[in-house]
Length: 420
Image (cartoon, rainbow, N blue to C red; front, top):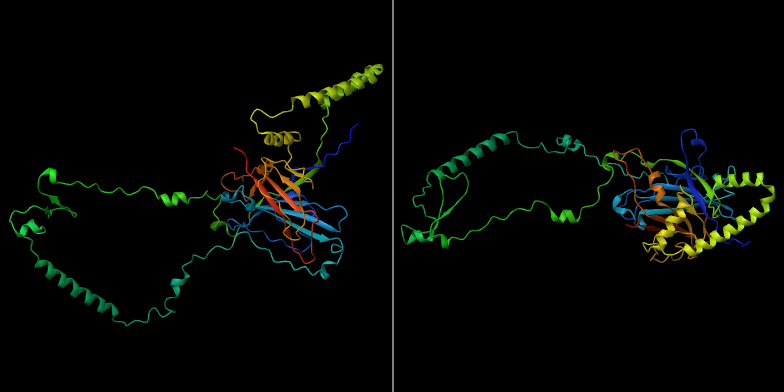
């Protein structure tokens, strides 16, 4: 029998919703979707801000992932931005790694810890105060320190101005209909623009032959602002200003974990029929077993023979879909192995080194698009709101570097958009 050297991959599935009866048992070792970060004891992890729009990101996943032969408890907190203008970009996701020493988790050990934890920060800042209280303080600010007879003075001045205007207009006479034309100086019958005295608005008529008349079309005012159209962004799913005091989050759901099954097992009903047949024909059991092995070999050979590039030509995307369909319902894949991720298309960027210690990076978590329907915004918005992404890949430090003074360490995130 050939030895299977394939990497173990653990799959995350949706479990039951978190309710008040579970609340007392949830801690930093809980695997879950949504909610708010659960940290050790009184430690608090602030929500990170999106690097693109500066909104606070929401917790998408909390994964307890301790390493073998490590003295630390280890949890990954994965956040995403709900602004549609940030979707499918690396900066719209953030992965923070938090580690707690086993010694620190002992009773009364927290009092001797030197870790400084910041206070909780709401993902939305307080709304601006649009009140009219400023206008009520006019008397206290000296705005009423004016002479009492200022009103009488104002009316007196206005009366004098009105009388002067009436005198000027009464002396104005227009006898020449073409008085505004230079031709009227040389000839009493000049050619030029004649003002219509009975017109309700400013207008002019031009005398002369039609061939000498030049028609000018009035410019049409644009019906839309082209600049604003170019700068238009996707509308935000909620009114941020009106919900400044509301703490948004995704619905909190437990995650169950299972190891990925690579075996090509026969369906259960076929197994039952085979066992029943062997029970009725015990003499044929050994022969049937050999036939089954031979059938498996033929099946494997036929699969190898049929395996090829799909008709649409995208072998990598075909492999992505086929691998997910083998274990329906999986929401994420976990394995600390660079050969484990399923790509939608080849990545063009370099993973690089750990930003903290300069060490190597390795793949650890892949978030699948099947998680999208589970990220339910709370409280509910008017429309069914769902974020968009193709797949999210989390790369972490191979050494899982950590310092006792750290609050968290940020890991590398790659987001691949869904193929159209």
